[in-house]
Image (tube, rainbow over all chains, first blue to last red; front, side, top):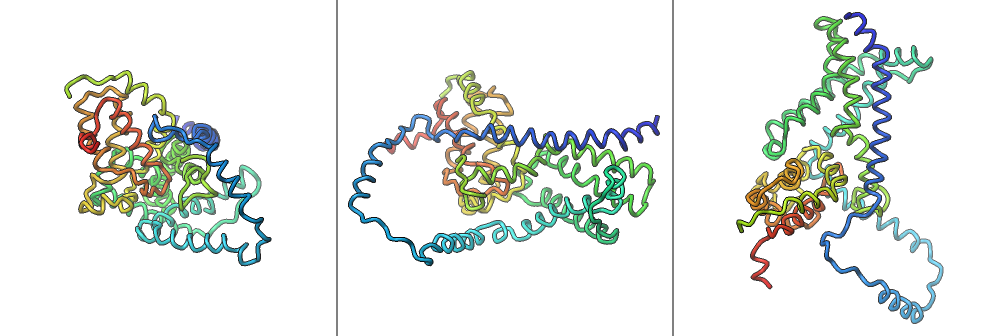
Length: 249
Length: 125
């Protein structure tokens, strides 16, 4: 029975998990985009609509009075770029890296290592080669071990922040701890398995199951910010948006 | 003020913008980074009550959680949150990108539809 269960989580379950993960991400992204396709209605439901005709008329008369502009010189052409760079610096000053330097740096490290560690782990790549016949470049075991330790420290930082920071505690629910647990468990068990601490068989089973559960959990939970983070940047018209944020608010 | 609220109307309003608002609510990571971007939070001794996400979760979040089955006492409870603790200046910074003011504004519309809005505005007029 146990052997069958292990075989199941090592074989078909992996494919199911990855299928749900990628399929779920695509479906959720598509649904999010289709929901936000229409612009948000005005804040006041009864607000009168702007009349466009009047504006056009004034523009036309203005256009007749003003002479046609000459071709722009190179400095003039560069003006928008200069303005953009200037604005970007100003915006950087108001960004999270200035207002919350520690949280910003820790979360960047946390999220980068969250991807780098499992993807470039040698042992994972061995399994990858078995399945597909080729593998990604792997980091050495010592490096990934260090990355895992740093990652877990960042996770502990988030946990302590949740518990001890007043403003974060005010909005924390049990679900937030669950999300953190789901993210950290595969890394903790992977760390234990690499060190061969505890019963290897049990640790390995927990490692595989928690990893698969995390993959399945991602598209349908708060962990979906993995894609929403980027999708939101296409929607918002703000300093930190990609493009011009024309689609919505 | 003791007239019962029109629950059907609240439910209808909640349902009309459910797909968008529920997404916004569920995408809030409860990280608390929006705090410093709110000037009311900064000016009120960093009281967590003025945290943008706190305001949203405790007004519109609760409305959706209860599915619109609320009474006037509840609306009066969230009245100071949506009308007094937020001025809709739209400067709240969310690292994920959730539109906080849209949610507060929506909670305001629901309150207004049930006649829950600050009396001071009437004296201004």
